[in-house]
Structures are given as C-alpha cells and as structure tokens.
Length: 118
Image 1: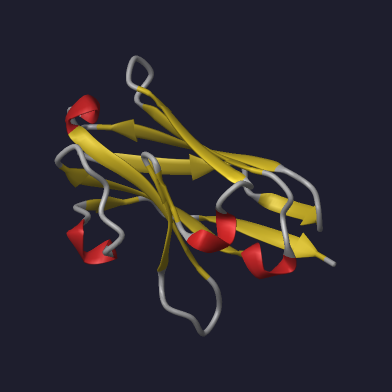
Image 2: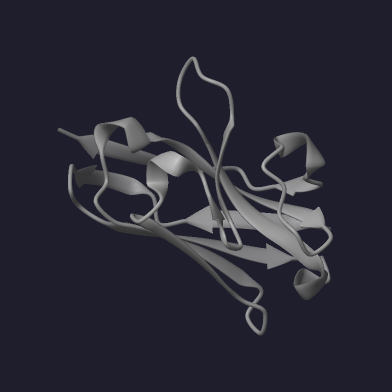
C-alpha cells in the first residue's frame, strides 16, 4: 500500500519559516519524481516545487530536498507570506523529472495546512 504522509505544517507569522516533511512508503522511492503542490481555498491546486523547479512566487524563498535512504522529501519554506497559506501536498510520479501538472502524479498525501498571519 502506497502512503505519502506530510507533516510540519502550522501557523507562522509572516516572514517566518516552516519545514514540511513527506514520508513515503510502498513505492520504489528513488524511481519517483517528488514534488510539492498547494491549494488555497477557492483556488486550483498549484505546483510549488520539484527538483530544480520552483513556481516563480516562491523562488529564492523555498528549497526542496530529498533523502532517498529515508524515503523522505522536504520543503524548506522561508520568508513566508500570507499568500503562501494553503494546504500543501506531497506528490509522487513515475519518472525522474517532476512535472508541474498535478495530473501527471500517481500518488498524493493527505496534505498539511500552512497558515501565515500578517
């Protein structure tokens, strides 16, 4: 059974930092492209970060990393802004290159809420 479990979300003041984690199980982790998406209320799910790819609004503030030995992927978020508030999802897709299209992903976590106060 495939599971992606996110953690690390919470409430933070604008300018603050959070580190999201995603623990994967049930897949050959190193063979999957991993990415982070987010969805704010009333908005479409949005690509945030994949390996060497970031949506423009987070470039320079967010960093993604993965540990294949631990089947983990992380999203380090700095300089958080109120517009970053959303449910953040971890996604896994077959292949080595992350896609910005959420439809290309095979597995999803349940999401973790990030709230940024101004």
